[in-house]
Image 1 (cartoon, one colour):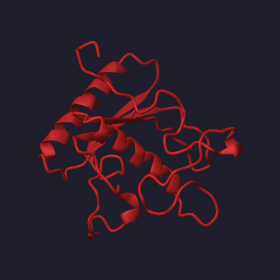
Image 2 (tube, rainbow, N blue to C red; image 1 turned 90 degrees about the horizontal axis):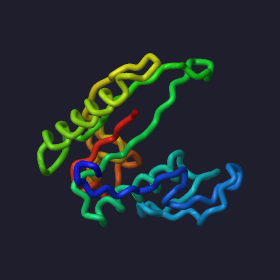
Image 3 (cartoon, rainbow, N blue to C red; image 1 turned 60 degrees about the horizontal axis):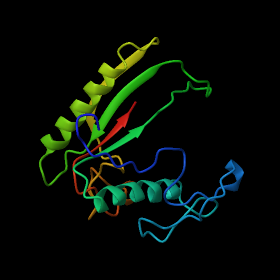
Length: 174
């Protein structure tokens, strides 16, 4: 924003876009919606693992598409645990992109490199150990193009969006 970019936030807190009705976690928001059109919504017995996550990620892609965004930057914060589930006190960043684009792989690869470099530079003074894991072309749901037919490289339609981003998209794990 300081450099003149217009920023649209999908959310600025820990609330869901595809529905937030999850009483065991204290959520009493709207009911879950089938955003990606697979006929499934929410979570629980009888639903494939990740149903809610797929609807939530599809909602974020759709927001960027409707806003006619120039790029989609999805920021996630991973935590690391050991084999026993105990937290590992380390920080790492990595940025993912797809190399399956109609506008050329360099558009997303260059964006990923810039985001990763900015993240690393921004955290260079952090008072803890951190790793720079670089960038990688990987079709995670938020950056993947829609899966029109399965292939040996992309055999699982559950891991691909119904509607992909209509702009370069990257996923930054900070």
